[in-house]
Image (cartoon, rainbow, N blue to C red; front, side):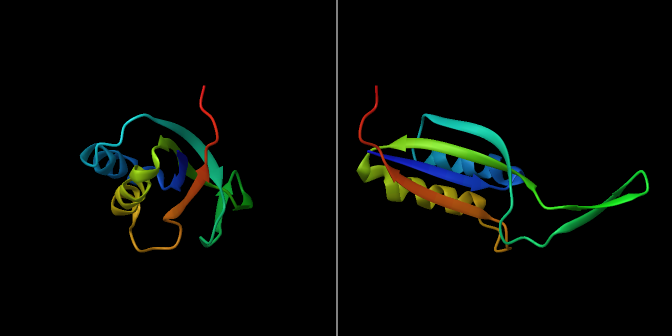
Length: 100
C-alpha cells in the first residue's frame, strides 16, 4: 500500500477530483496549505506597505491506495492538475507499512 500526497493549485481541485472519480479512486483527505515552490514571487501593497508574498495557497491531497492503483492515481492527478505553468504542484508516493 502507498500514500499518494499531491500539492496542487486550489483552482485545479475540481478537475483533479473529477479525474479521480473517473479512475474509481475513492477515499481521500483534502487540506488547505501554503507553500512556496518555483513560482515567481508576488509583491503586494497593503495600507501603503509593500510586502513580498513568498507563500502561495495550495491544496494538499492525501490518498491511500493499493500498489496496483498508484499509477492510475498519479495519472488522474496529473490529468486534472497540469496547466503547463510553473507551480502546478508535486506528487509524492510514500510507502505505508501499516493502517489501523
